[in-house]
Length: 308
Length: 259
Image (cartoon, rainbow over all chains, first blue to last red; front, side, top):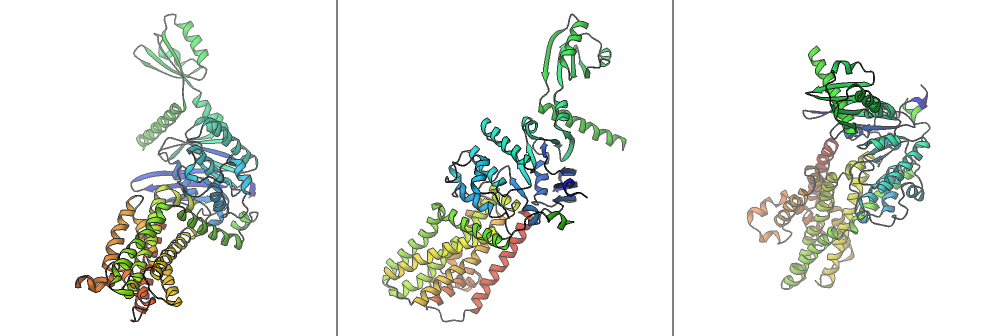
């Protein structure tokens, strides 16, 4: 098999339970060389558990977990990764430069200190004790620690939480530079715009399972759906026949229509029903996309139960 | 397959692995030496106690009392960097996510614990040197260089069983609960091992159960090093080694299982 096409990280049928609760349920996940995969999902979806398995912090109860084709608990595999966790209280009295020096010492060929500092935009912080930094500055230092070892695969768990817009933009630029150098990134985030700005592929998780995997465009298409609400007497069966309409429901005299091209539907609606009132058009947000994906997922599993 | 995958990756030279251990130990020492909240109680408590009981109140008992209490308060002082430096910091770092972060990084195995151990040994050395300085100048104790060196060595190595005990407690309790729990171990054990008042002054029952406490055995060694205990020492050494090994194993098992 060609080395370049071999995934850098892989979960296959990975399951992890905590007592009665199944945090991760037979998840398949692959990170290819040089790509950024964004892991999206609500809190408790299993994103952090998935990352924990790939970092060797926990063992899978079933399935395969590989990092560069090896067991993640092997130090040889971990020497090729960089890590930024969601919450890590670093030693408060150490200076930023000392933290960088310590972390770089774990790697075979680390970046020079100045290079790392420039990448993370912390050149002016090196002499400051970690505890004296603001939350956003601490996140930048944690990013610097993640990249100082010249990793081939970078794990970023909610990297921009607590950062202002400018800092976030700078971090995105640094991540793009790393990807251009051939580094792979596994990113978890709450922000859809972050995934849109960076990701080649997205993977949506909920309740321990992957419910959507594909390109950013595919997810955006789902999220680009808009909701049209109005009071109208138009018959629902006639509306279902319109090709522009994805879905339509009636609630007394109110219609709830879902469509990608809302303008075309509104134009047709107004022409078909001159008495139409209380027109509202809303963009479906990420939250709604999640809700929709989750609802589809719940329906599917309910149907499977009925069939079985 | 694995060799093919690793072929184009630079291997970690042995010199760099050693360097990582040294960096870890250096960082661990630096961070605690810079934290007055950690260093001051460790140094001041034994120093204050020794000044009060060993120097001022022991005037009547003469240099022998001051010499006896130098060993006992030395042991009292050595216990705390082990229990607190190791146990409390481990409990806090398990809680704050630092340990998880370190486990995800390619830190060489054991470097984290080894760094903490060296830090505790350094802090123990500082405590003993402080007490020695007080004993020789204010307490009019006379010690040969060999005796002073033996006491220092006893302190620096004697911290290890308490590191192991602290580490075990640190794996049982997360976060802010650990300091209270360790105080509950530290203070009664010090008293019942005869570190505050010589054992013969304690009730008979406490004298009889004293050999249960590791601090008692370290005290016997410390007394021997300043020339106040002629009994054979092998038994005490074996107990301390056993305590160290036992608690280290228990803690390592819990760390592997629960992180």
